[in-house]
Image 1: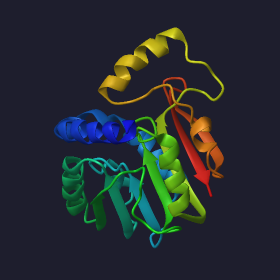
Image 2: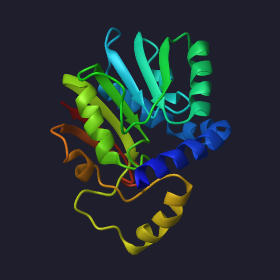
Image 3: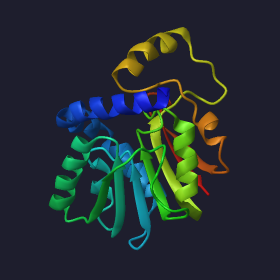
Image 4: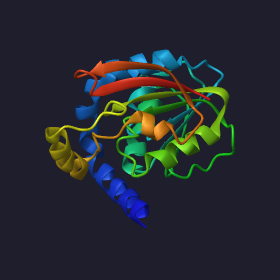
Length: 205
């Protein structure tokens, strides 16, 4: 199945990227801080970091006491555990596929989806799982690169996407198309850089 193959490929390439990932992704620290600030998770709430990578979001979650972090790449989670130990943050970290979350329904108060929906092979399957494990009234923080809803990608962007997808990500996904398969409500959406190429959104169940 194409999704299984793509997931295995993602595991391989992100294990490979792990030693260099922080050098690239640290440039998004301000957007991560803003997104988690909008989410505003409370200390006693259950928080899920889906596609947690090396744990760069943990810098902004130090007051949270119930954090679960999942990623497809074991090498990424190894670095996340080291970061959590340095920060003094307790994290339950597990290797897991974001298409099939091994959690009961309504397990989490808040979910963080940073630079995930443009990377994961089937973003609609992922967001359905997020909706399932989120408690009623819970929130999802999204930060990623998206094409504007109902907008057709210009030629340069379609051409650039061929290279982008080979390296790591799809730059032509629309958040509206992804969320449309759920009943999640988009209650906030803002430009997060490069004229709206990056966006921050807050969803509510």
